[in-house]
Image (cartoon, rainbow, N blue to C red; front, top):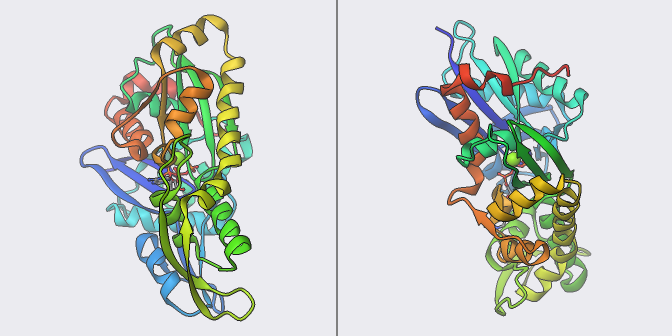
Length: 334
Ligand SMILES: Nc1ncnc2c1ncn2[C@@H]1O[C@H](COP(=O)(O)OP(=O)(O)OP(=O)(O)O)[C@@H](O)[C@H]1O
Ligand SMILES: [Mg+2]
């Protein structure tokens, strides 16, 4: 019997929802590759752990960059492995519903659809991520009322206004949490002469970064390497330094939301101001982001209690209600 699965193939994490079992997979979109043999030695969480701990010739490869597939072969291999982990086989090929950023080009949509089919799907439908998010947030999407949804992802930051079951305005920036990590690593290297890996930079962002106007002073000790000699080193890093690293990027993300609101028809923008902005995605948890966004737009900001799984929960609900919601799906060829 063929199974129905929803997949949010994100830049940072891949999430799968099984119609019968709910959320069955939530792991990093990472493969550990041996650069000498080109072999994939691990995938997902295992790959993420392996890369920092093994020899230099094992590197992390992400098949997506800025919300789109950039390594087709790796995307297919990763999806195949993910489907196998979720119980699919040659005899039991699933029907997939894949979420896609509304800014994705037709080539990017087709690449996603083809990677899914090459990985073993019997069919692949696409669903715009902001619509999936709205469904995950229990927003009545078919009403003639505008709702603003902001997805702060790892590779993209997307603002969309939804009304009558469609996206009426959207603004997607190809910047996100991974860019914040890179900015933090760069700041630490230039100001403190220490090279830190991507995991350390991400931890600094989660633990001590804050874009709140009245951020408390904090500091943590981190370990890395000296750039000139490669020797191990450690420094005390203050929150203020990390905040300087991320501030400009966060301002750009917020400017994206403002620009989307300014392009929204006035009556829908009015509804949106009334209903507030719905902020989700892993980056929604950045300290002070919601407050800063609210201050800059003069609109209240709501954050879901589980902001990272809003899209996949909404896509999963579409599987349960497939007949009524089919009109929302699109094929890659639009
Ligand atoms: N507490 C936190 N504070 C700040 N950022 C966080 C926090 N928790 C997670 N993140 C960031 O959220 C990002 C992951 O978010 P998400 O899972 O929404 O990404 P994604 O869906 O894979 O990416 P995209 O939608 O852009 O393709 C990562 O950059 C991660 O570091
Ligand atoms: Mg996402």
